[in-house]
Length: 279
Image (cartoon, rainbow, N blue to C red; front, side):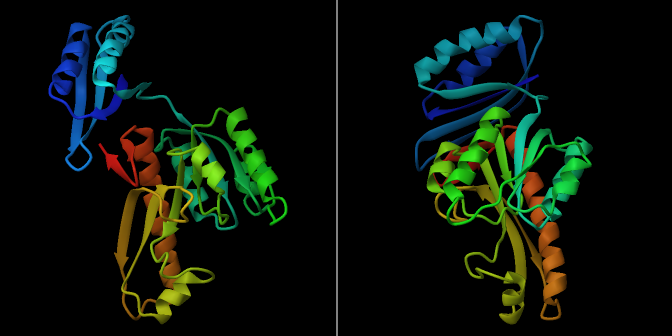
């Protein structure tokens, strides 16, 4: 099976044209969803289809090129089961990395982890026991540009599509964010920007926070303000101490990051300006 995803200016006849092209070329629609954004006038569509004979997919793709040109579509066809080549960046905290490694090993996430990059040696054993290449790239104010250049070289060498910041505690440059727009997913606790800096859970406890949570988003030049993919919250009380709060928060971060990655690998996420459309 394959996934067709497209977006363009909203016009009459798009859904009919897509469905007709699939049917005419012996492809069966297994799943379909679409969204018309009334504010921007943009149309988004995701279709899962199954070719009914070996030549059907290629025949449909050739026919669809004319339709895409007619409607000025941006479009993509990808196999449903093709693992997304993924590079994970992490610092010292390993809760998100541990969770991703488990979901990768058990195939609960359709990713192929091609390497782990870190500015610390803390997580090397986790990578090596799974047979995953580990790249130790320490960073300072003086070498940050070169360090990011090394990361980009790994991304290109490994033909990486998705870059996951699994609690990577470094601010990416504007250049790197722009170069891989819509391909870098970050996770952070949702106190930000209210509680920046060290010990955010202690800050939250001191302020009597009643809800904690996590947000997964695409990384942009604006720190922790990129288009949101997935979120979750957990209610707490005055009796929830900083350590318990941190444990709940880290568990939530892991779950939200995994859900965001799943949405990405299923080709459900459309980047739309400063926000996302999830089909």
